[in-house]
Length: 305
Image 1 (cartoon, rainbow, N blue to C red):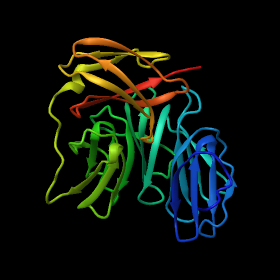
Image 2 (tube, one colour):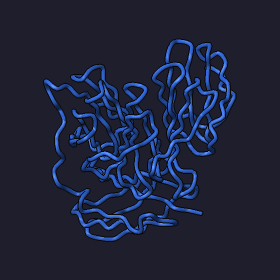
Image 3 (spheres, rainbow, N blue to C red):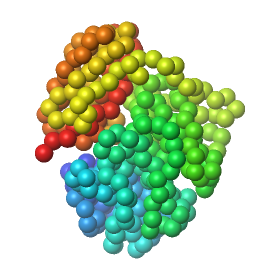
């Protein structure tokens, strides 16, 4: 165990070589090491928001992204060109949750996440982050991780086992699905042919272009279950128009950690009121489960003062 010098939640780490690396997390914390982690030094980020992902293209140039401090504030995108001695805010143009950042060179990069209403976000820059542009895609899932093998070919993964792929640098994204039904939290590729994604409940899926194991899910219960109000404050009503009966409600945070489990019947064809756990604020994944292993995953935004 290395000593970080903080008790803050750390969410992402990136090294440019065996000695030099950075870690980011809650309360705007950024830590740097230059000796392989023996000692970590606090850097000044200029934000108190949660930083969820960090990426460097070399030992001097890097970005950190995160979550809006207040409901309608811009999501933080921070850039450094001096190894983190100073970090400068860039304009994301969106509020909500930026969860993953990836660059293929010092100019070209992508950020993924979700806005405060649960709508997917994919942003791209071709000028080192001076400007960020929303990309075209057809999904409303929370996106939690992005990875590119070159400037044209990349993937993003997220809730409801969604996998998006682009072969034109993100001008267009097409949806694929692993068939697990799980929240996919992280994706990594060794080349354009082979990659893996991992997620909730121990899910590990492998992509192989010669034996693709992804499939479009059948139209089913997920489209027949709705939540309201959303955003919610103290409770949410589950409108279950499917033929499935559920007996458990599970909440995940945006990094895939289970934060609450409730044993509660959600009968088929009925509306069920579910109290939101104390202390929750922000975007969460609400998962309905039953004894047969069937599940439905939805998103809920908890908006509290």
